[in-house]
Length: 160
Image (cartoon, rainbow, N blue to C red):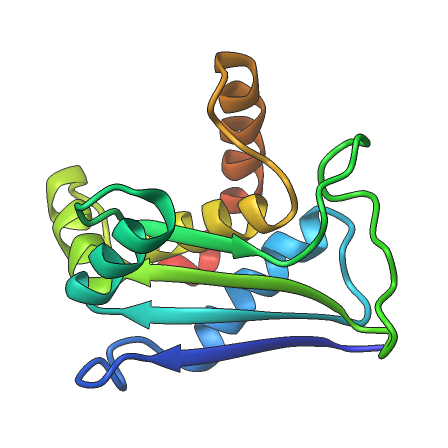
């Protein structure tokens, strides 16, 4: 029974954030949603150029964004995050969250809070997307916002 968080950094971003800290934020987000055993996900700290390229290729938007999430789980008709089909290896491969590091730095400055807080917000947001949450409709956005705030409170001590 394990939770595997694979953290990768684009070239030139190695060491900009602590890998263990990033893993801890992702684990907290998963645990808050009742996801805790035999799961695997990727977390990429990426350049602005990489995120813009991915956003253009996969979302048809030729502009950078702060976070992208590529879920590997099939969509279900049940509540997000609660229904998984076990793959042959028994590990639930959730997908990847990609954080635009330069954008996170800018947003932290604009919002006048720490870079750690901004990155935590983006990691939590991305993990919720992997679990099936979205914010296209106002009611979905409200649910996702509440969940983000709840999870953020659980990691508050790690944001200093």
